Image (tube, rainbow, N blue to C red; front, top):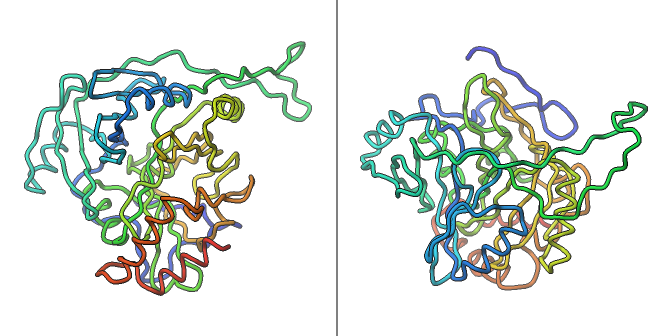
Length: 377
């Protein structure tokens, strides 16, 4: 593709890369995945997980004694697969290939075998591991669930344009209906190696880079990565990768209808005792309206609406990272969202930081200073 567009020359993002900086894409990737198919988790209590899932806005697609499949209203695969296990943990992500030929080609190029997926999913899969050891499955031919009835956006009167007359606005305080899985955010001690792996193996491309203030010369520490669908627009990011002292899941995001359903669904969650982590606001990178929640196992999950869609022509933006730069509007990022609130998670991250600084990875003392500066900004 010969045309290149820079839509980042604005208040929030510097105008593109400097000479010699990361191009944000691989010159000859093995395949180009089409989308994120589903995420997999292990949890000890499937009943508790299903109760929260329904309050959050999922529908149960399938339930056995040992596995729970959750879906949105859009046609397609389940969004989340939860397997019964002794402890709560993130198991990995599955990506949808364009066709069976890409799965076969990826398997041949990586020396992996192609397997059949379980009957409940159908199709074929090649299973890889990214540089962090996280499972990455690429699938095709999977069974598509039919669409379910979806929530309808509210009709808005904007300015003096009266689209709604003789009728009130009363969005019901009920669970929002999740439409689909949008993205997953992962932290890595080998951020650059991991980024390059996703670009090369899955053909993904970077929408936005971020770097620690004063450390741009050392390269980026976070990237928002989308699928390359050519002229067809894709989500601003399907995967986001960030440098940190441990390899871990950070959050996943699920699209909902609009701001009103997001807010009313949030009130429904709050009234049932679930914990909001941060929100409501609008992001800068990706532009999504967001609302973050903790599930009963401590996993961070996001409702979002109105995200950016980019085609393959758009070049990456570059911007300094800061806590205040996470949103255009909304409350300040909370210590819970940033992972600095006192508790088990922050204690684990502190231990990981000490271990990481002693190890052979990309998270060194200078990077730690940059991260602390971001957290305090």
